[in-house]
Structures are given as structure tokens and as C-alpha cells.
Image (tube, rainbow over all chains, first blue to last red):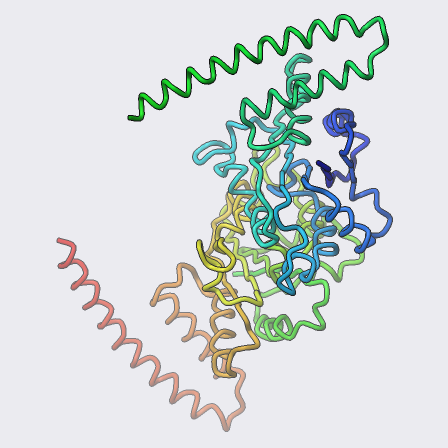
Length: 230
Length: 230
């Protein structure tokens, strides 16, 4: 699976959050594509990038409840009517569409009656409308609120979740999570030097054993749920 | 009352709809301000324009369910945090905020389950969020769908409604409509040459008489409503 991240930030070098996410994006089959760096927008090339991807992510800080103007300029240029739906073909059909939104405010502010009075879902309606028009599959928003207020441990947790958002099979079920982590550990094992191999293999064995336990727990939970419903 | 129309359209000279609306905007105390024509955005000057206005309108064609990128660039530059809410002063407080949106699709497409699946109100959430943040009063959207499919008579009707949206006291009640039309006719009378004066005065007399009739009808309607409710 190939993932394309369309990143928009007018001062990306000054954004430590974006730099951190950039490090997390360094995975196989993930392309980081920063629109403000493009000297001029080559429509054919940009459309090719979109067609090659299976998952397309728009990533940006919230500027006036929307993306920075750089992303809108990119949209207005690249997303021609014919490319999205014009001649009743849909080049982006069935691809997944996600949004990674960094905000300076806590998530609890984005609710009816709270400080911002609108949810991120409501504010992102125009993007969902584009994805709908292109017949794409919409993923839940991945919010990154107040990154720099987080402890290092919380940041590492977030980075792992971000990496899963980029490459894990969706929906975000227990089974899909397990498969993703297993592959990740196997990859670490392949990349490791001989000294590290032993400890990684120990972790992997341990992890596989835990997964079997989790599977059993999961089955039990499902049975309880079914009994509750009947 | 002063009205500022912030217009965004990257090819405004080719837009007959915008040219038509431009003609309609030529009224006393109405400023037409086209952002794509600005060579560079002078923040102080733009903020001054906003402060001088009592009613601020954003006017644009719907590009990917939002304004063209030119308006977003203007927003990201002019609407500094401090200007909108930063130091807990609100320079735009209690001003009215409106949206004039031209679309190539009919209004009936902008509904859940219809072709576009989202209403204009839902799509415009980010603008409403800005107005909320600035403590402005939000006016209902003024949509201009498929302008060039309309007959000349329908276009003239729309132009009159547009002029009222720009300068009439809100809410759009019968009384406020009457007052607006009366003033408009008086203005025609002042501007007319002597030959026309007589016929205009006749219309005005007739109009005033009708208004009294309408007022009585209105009172009767209110009474019926009150009886219904009790």
C-alpha cells in the first residue's frame, strides 16, 4: 500500500511539530509532499502522484478553521473537474482519504458550547465533500492538538499512532493493529545488527504469545457482547 | 450604514455574474473590494477598511466547496490573531457578517442525500467560526445559483434582493423591506430630471398608500397567529 501525504505549512522549517511528523513519515511506501516548496505546480505530475497512491492524506495546521492558503491554491490548480468527476470517470475512486490536523488548542475546545463551538468534523466539511465527489473512502480525522505540551512519552505514543494512520490497514481494529505491529517488529529484526537481533527476537516471541492471549480475550469479549444483545 | 464587500474571483473580468453584481453594488456607502487585484496586501489598510464597515460581506464563487485561494491568502494575512480576538478586544464586535456565494449548480443539490450531499450552511462552517470568534452577527447566506440560466426578469429580481442584502436593515422583515424600498424611491425622485419627477411621485404616493394597507394586513396576520398560539 502506498501513502501520499500532501503537507501544507507556510513556515514548515519553524514548525517543530511538522519536523517531528516528518521523522515519523520516513517509512517504506510513504511519500511526504510539501506543497509550499513547489516552485510552480505541475498539474500532470501532481495528478500522477495522486493516482499512484492508495491512501491520500492532507496534513496542515488549522489556520482560520481551514488549511493554509497554499493547500487551497494547490487544490484549485490540481483538482480539475475532469480529474475528480467531470467525464464520469473517477481516477481517485476507492482510494482512502485522511486528514492530519495540528492545532494550538486542546481538542475539548472543538465542541458545541465549548470555546470554538464547532467540531473538527464540522469544520472539515469542504474536504469531506471533495472526497465524496471523487468517490474516495473517508478515514476519521487524525488530530494533533498542542503537540508541544505533551510529555516525551506521549509524543512517542502519538508518533506511533501517526505511523499507523499512514500505513496500517483500516478500520483501526485490534486485528489490524496486531498485524501492523508484528510486521513492524519483523522489519526491526531484519534491519538490526547481530547484537540486537537476539533481544528483538525475544520481544517478537513475547509479542506473538501476547497476541494469542489478546485474541482469546477478544473472542470472550465478543461472546459477552452477543449474549448481552440477545 | 457602511458595507464592505470583500470579493474573491481569480478571473473576475470573465465572470458575467460578478460583473452584474458589481453593477448592483454601486450604491452609496458600499465599497467593492476585489482581493485578487491587490498587488500586495497592506495589512493596516485592510484592517482599517474592515473597522470602517458596519456590514462585511465575503463574496465568491464556490471552488471546491470553499472560497478561491485568493480569499484564504487574504484571510491568513489580514486577520491576525490580535485583530480578531488576541488581546481580548474585538475590533469587529457587533458588525454584521454575510456571505454571497455564486454556484454553477442549483440550490436543490446542496442537501443531504442530493447530488452534493452537504448544505451551503454546512460547507461555510469555517467562515461562521471566524465570525463567531470576532463576535460578529451572522447574516443568512445569500446564494446566487446558476445566474445565467435565469430569465432577465429573474435576474432583475435577484439584483434587487442583492442590493437589499447589501444595505437593508436586518432581519429581512416586512417593515425593514418597506423602509428600504421607500428610501430607494425617494432617492430615485431626487436624482430624476423634472420630466420624470411627476411619475415617480405618483409611484411613491401609490407605494405609501399600499404600505398602509400592508401594515393593516400584517397586524391582522399577527392577531390571527396570536389567537392560534393561545
